[in-house]
Length: 342
Image (cartoon, rainbow, N blue to C red; front, side):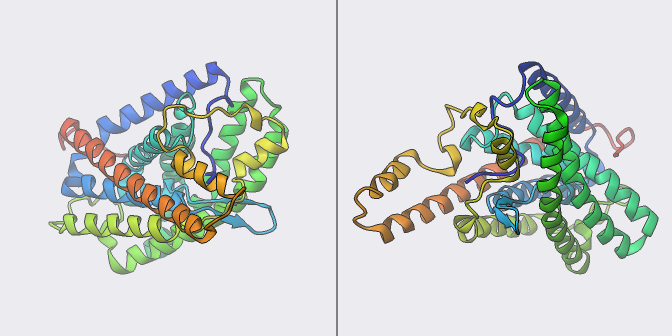
């Protein structure tokens, strides 16, 4: 399973890896310090819910019509709509760390670039577009239109950031990689916009209190534990029932890397226990079955079950890690009198 926008080790120049790591570290460190205490009891459970849901959704690759490639939800704007721009960036960072360390999805040396492109630009930058349109248009209509437009635009912006990172290190020229990254990720952004828009409409109708509002965060007591349980259950359901049927087409970034002939530079995360969301021993058994296919139906079922189980593991890990990070952010946050949000 190949997932869009996750840069592997070996693509970026070491100097660019260092620069993006420092920028991301500064941005996420700032976010952790400035997350508002005034969010009260909502921050930690909702951070876990969003991390779990985004992790599960990112396992589901969908084919791009007519493009011979696939894409999936990034979730930066969606996370920011619920958690605010800083909380969204932190939650998405938690997802990226779990994906990298457990599944080798995105490289260790490239983790800073992945956080910058998807968490910082995706959540903070995307929220800036969303908040501007929401304020300009006003009301629920402005909220939905802002969510749709921001979630669509920010995907090609993140793709351009990767194109700049690759070209700045001298690996490829900017114009061809930017052109092809824009081509695929404008299409991926359309899917992102549809999902984000539908979820936003549902939230406005069913749970409007879940939508972040920097000017009115004290919304009274709610049963956040129940919300957290429901969100985790939904994430697990996506991992179990949708992830095994994800498209096997190459994602947008890998398609561009193959087209521009730098795909062979990709390096695996050697210590990841479940590389590419697979159990190595199980994959060896399936590969052997191609020579002597004794029970293909059982093996196919085993592959689907393995994907589902690893999806559950990753979803729960992202949920738990986000809860730990969110709890630490609340404990270390500034007082309500000095805190502020973007």
